[in-house]
Length: 313
Image 1 (cartoon, helix red, strand yellow):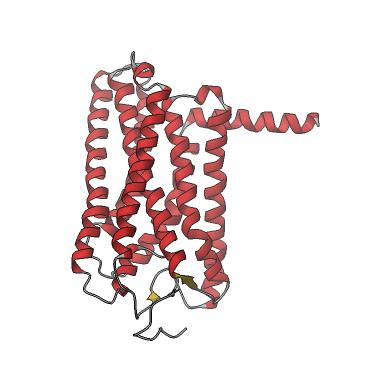
Image 2 (cartoon, one colour):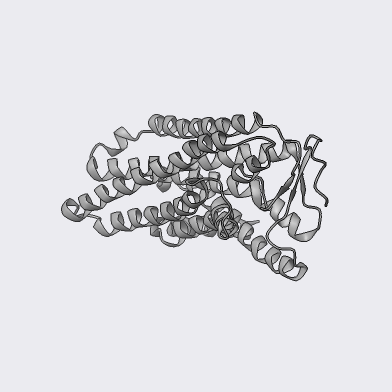
């Protein structure tokens, strides 16, 4: 598709996708369809299990269910467009759809970052204040904290989109990516974007870096406490924290690579985007289901109830 005339207003963008080879596209479609399906199955299983299993009605699993919802939502913002582009040569996206995709992508991703912080807070209270844990992290507090996380994601996304909408788009309309994202879109603006790029980096990049550092420090403090003072349930506490640290690293390292630097093109950008938007949500669900003994037992109980009810019918 030819680039639009330099004097016209851009009404759509062309997504180049991951590759131009039809053979590779078909292979990638199969791979990413399986990844996306696994993401849905894994995260929806977590959500249903937490809702239906009374033993999982605790602050930690309430936060985990919220993270699972955000993961499947964030993946659903980008994956369908990628899969559609791999099946056909129609890879355009309207300007308004592009803006909406960026809004919801940063909304869900921003909220997820704050939920990660809440999960660290939850483990901190559980380790340092075990006797008061359920009083401190009661239902009202948990709901309020999660609502704050969602509001934080909303505020982050509004700032991103507000800065993009101030830019004029009157010429180039080709995005070398499989979805709309701020770093690529602002490069197509018909004006100097240096100041906007600094504002974007200070918003997205600093948010990611600061939260990542806070989380690493928090989990270091928690692990020291577990090692020195916790006797009962030490292995379970270490396993839980280890799982959360793994998920945090999988989430923050690719996003730091994408957003915490000036918006220049690097060869690894697309790979980091694929990992961040598609692979991480799937791995998160697998880690929380396969490495969490309590979650695995709850899922088995849920499966038995479903099978038993089908047999009765």
